[in-house]
Image (cartoon, rainbow, N blue to C red; front, side):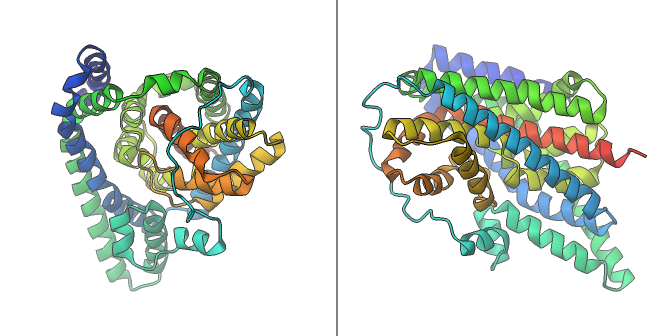
Length: 390
């Protein structure tokens, strides 16, 4: 754990270097890319074997999965509602000329039943692995685990033992990668902040304040309150214990890359492996609290700029529908472009409004990802607590 304590140091060092010596970011960017690539290398095999080992070994799918999905729905609705209400309040007096930007072609991102099925059920496992589609991997691991319960006992035990051994190997590799965490995070933050277009962000002051308020209310009030009510414990020691995955998400803007660290941190806090192995991969694709509130606000601001009359109920419906249709989108930086294009189609807004999304997303992708991860951590801890209730 000593290395994890150094992650805040790496974050602060990256910020300091970006302020004092921004021109030097290009010389150390490779170090951050190595760290991020090594984390991503472990993600999919770790998800595959950990879910299989957990469910094949006797985990109660209905109790774990059903509870997790219920909490995901609850927190997402809360986040989207906050975003809609605050977005409507702040989306007045926007500066003109903000959409005079390069057009982005995302015409292929349309809603269809085929797209939903394709995002859930893979046709080629190796292509899913190459594409980093977490929901595909969850589906394969789930089906394989359920099927293995019906094969011969000796074959089942062999597969289960192999999965557990591979899981132990991957976790050992993870501990080695985390030795690079302070330097890797410093390099990632340094590179990101040094090239940030702060002028474009600060021109949208009303939007910045709206997102900051909604994010603060959800991350510091709604989720901690849910944690306290459902576990009976103070949320703040849990926040402190989870600072390593939260700072990693804040630094990388990748909920997928944060998964191995989230899993390790939760299990060190006493959360059962059968819970982390199932809820965290599922949450990385389905539980998007930060994205729900952020995209709600952004849609309302876009509608105001376009002169469209959008009610709170319409905005909430569109956000929830989009979250369902985009299930399986890889948790990588900038992964929400296709989702935003789909929502613009539903609203009847031109795809040129994606330019506004690209201006602000470079900045907000990092804190929004951290909120997504925070929601996953809270729900995993709550589900584990529920399973221990009499």
